[in-house]
Image (cartoon, rainbow, N blue to C red; front, side):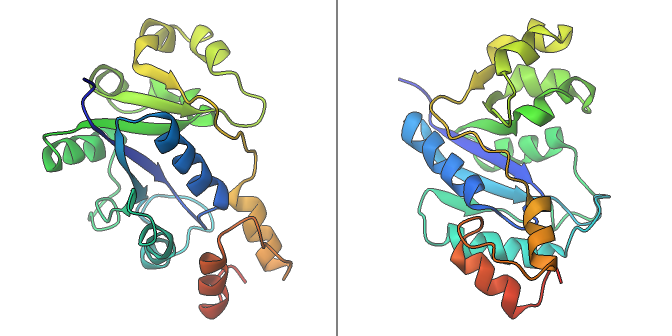
Length: 201
């Protein structure tokens, strides 16, 4: 019997999109061993343009995760006094959930650069990685075109039957700045929160 997994989904979530949640739901549908998906917003100390505060991004995620027993949002990175490397976050989850296998959810855009991440060799050795295809990416081609990824391809699971999406949070932020509708792109609860707190204006 396969060991139960906690799948860690890191990102800026600036703001969280419908696609973040629909892709996560599809992963849970397809892989019975995924017990829950934990969304991990990055620390705002992470240098990224237009990144709003930790608390706003945490609360937007929490509004959605509270309504799904398989979703959770973690403060593990935002409560840290410095940005954490992915390997550090995954190790912390390993300690917190010793009875589970910890998996990591990664977009194919990030997969292309995984070989230069800090302790990338430990990430691929110790954790299973679910890869979500973005745009016109092919996971197989990405793995074949990079020596490090090719050598470790047994660590990667191409997420099956998932909805591919090229929608970005940047696009949504631009529409919000222009005062345009983002209905159906982000959850209604997130839209209400954004308007109430006058975010991205």
